[in-house]
Image 1 (cartoon, rainbow, N blue to C red):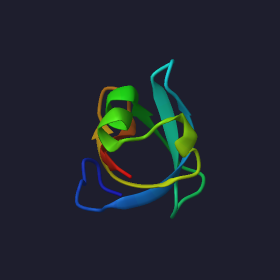
Image 2 (cartoon, rainbow, N blue to C red):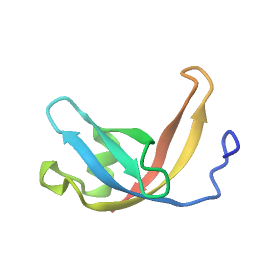
Image 3 (cartoon, one colour):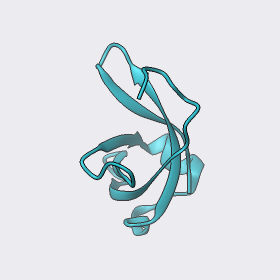
Length: 77
């Protein structure tokens, strides 16, 4: 994957989401070793709640140069 390549729509499943702490993780369908972080605002905008563990989602990834990792953008359920 190229850095900041937002043209590929990824799919995955919600592994964890804690509404009180304000974050969660997605397991990628293509690469089960990869987990991607999402925040409470993204979850709210996508209609994701604590009962959606295991639900399928689609998302784009963008490379965060400061943190040296990919971040989820455009999360949809």
